[in-house]
Image 1 (cartoon, one colour):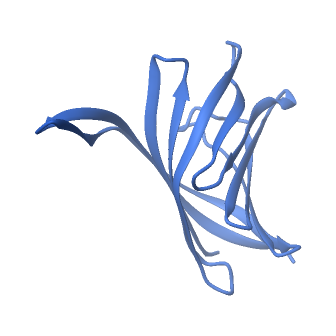
Image 2: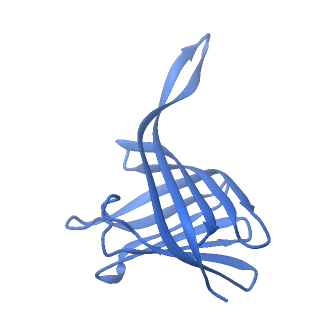
Length: 158
């Protein structure tokens, strides 16, 4: 059964820097950008998976885009659909310890292949589906762009 929920979605992006530490290097994260959005969505369970669906916002630069999040078997799948249909968006699976190649359609540009490596996924949803999902992952495009992202989705009663 679908139910309406309130969502707080926070996405924080970090640049990874290597700092000398004796004879080795230490990886430091420097916050580059952060975005927090409050929105309404729907939530339901099917075949032991939890689904969360919501419309993206203008603030995120994703107007007229719908996102479907699926939490299942220790993985988080995020699918975005833009105005152009299934090929105009993103389909990304985040599973700790696994490197995935994700195809991402950038509006008015082109399709890019992104390497996504998931460091950690935490599912703190209760039996009613309320709580927080948090995922820490690294995204790499070509050899020039690499960022560490932390995505947090808080699901609250409507």
